[in-house]
Length: 246
Image 1: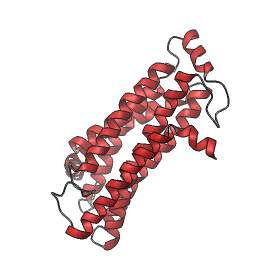
Image 2: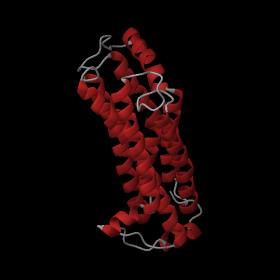
Image 3: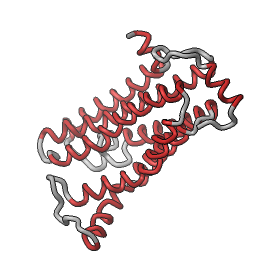
Image 4: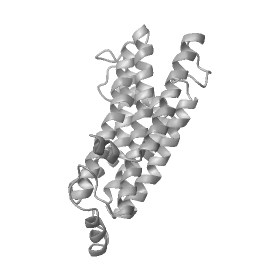
C-alpha cells in the first residue's frame, strides 16, 4: 500500500496541494457559518471568481501543460487528448460557458425540438442545458482519448487508466454532484453538498496534477512504476523505433 501511494507522485507535492485544498474548504465553511451566503465574498467556495475558483483554474492550466509534456516524452497522443479535455474544462469554468450557454441551448431546443421548457426529473431546463453544453465541449477530446488509449502500448495504457479514474472522480464532483446539489439547494443539505462539490473538484484536480508529475518523474528517471509491471525503458525504445506511435 505504501508503494502504491508513493507511485501516485511526489509525496511532498501531494501533501502541499491537499493541505491548500483543505484550507480553502475550511475557510469557506467558516466564512459561510459566520457571515452567511454571499455573492461577493471571495473566500466562499461557490463565489464566482473567488479564491477557490482561481485555485482550480491554476490546477487546470498546470494539467494542460503537464499532459502535453507527457505526450512529448512518450510520443503518445492519448496524453494530448487529455490535455485538450482539461483545456476545455478551463475554458468552460473561466468563461462560464455552461452557465451562460446552457439556458440559451435549452431555449433553442424547446423552440425547435422536443425539450420540456419546465425541465424534468427534478432538474430545470437550464440545468439540462448546462449538462448538454458540458457534454458537447467534452465529446471530441473524450472520444479521441478513448480511441488513442486503445491504440497505446502497455505502459501508456496502464498510466492512461489511472488518468481516466481521476477524470471520473473530477466529473463526479463537477457534474453529477453539481446536479444533485441543485435538487436540494434550498436546504441545509445544499450547503453540505456545495462544499463537497467544490472541495471535491479541487482535490480531484490536485490528485491529477500529482499523478501526471509522477509519470513525468518516472519517465525522466527511467524507473518502473509500482503496480505497473514492465520497464519504462520500453517507452523510450518505442520513441526511437516509431516516430509517432499513438
